Image (cartoon, rainbow, N blue to C red; front, side):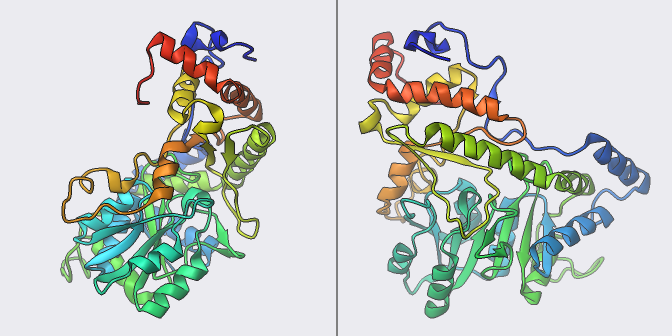
Length: 406
């Protein structure tokens, strides 16, 4: 336990962890199960082109979510681009600025202008009131994000889009296994896109999927991820190569067998973070709606610099010296990143909640690679830095080491 600022490795002490405790270390299933599936795939000679392993993975995902159509893809960014084109979105689409940059890039690469919207200060998800204020004659849809493994304001956004006659798409990259009012995510809006990147609660290494209840939209997406092919040699539409390959699906099926274990570990860690930090002045943990089920894969903290006397980035830098590799999300906000920041055709949006969160949010390690004891050790270090923020800043200033976090 750290008792003085000088105990921290940044100032010459011993680090709390000998190996890095990181955000997003992959959750993995049983290696023998994966190797058996990989051997069967190699013996079959079918490595791609919507083979039996990909089809099995799609069927299991569809069954778990109760959604008729699941189209596995090479990653979630391509999935977003495909479904945006398949939905014929054009002109402008409203999207939160506080999200991973891929959400905005998918629109821009599909020829659509992202219109950046502010988020709710508590949930960090798209604010329906701000959405309505941004709707114009050029608006064709809303791309909402189910952020941090939680559902956004789905009912309000659905009603708003129906009333205004525009389309609704969900980026559910963080939200596999989550639910809204008892219904699994996957079948809301026109479609939902999930990520199975290595950092997600369920991963295929790289991968994603499109889920929808719309038969025609599903058929269009399935064609588009396979070069627009209608059958073996008939090109029916513009397409790309967005297919998931067999080995990725095998990893997904392997990891899916331990999904409940992954969530149980997240739950234990989440409870430990709340127990250790709930009474810490200047730190707020993300509040989740108890009516919705979360995979709890993101431990999200907000720092109040004025109360603490030190910034999020200063605390983050010193934690890193302890091998506690926290991450700031989503800095500096999509609207302030390229190419949007320099695009003179796009007026700078008024997104004060986004800008505050981008300065103050920190995501802490969790998942199977972090034990409750690890969480408690990390929280001890974090709590000491927060409670001694003014001294921390003074020591950093004296050492002339205050720099932007990497």
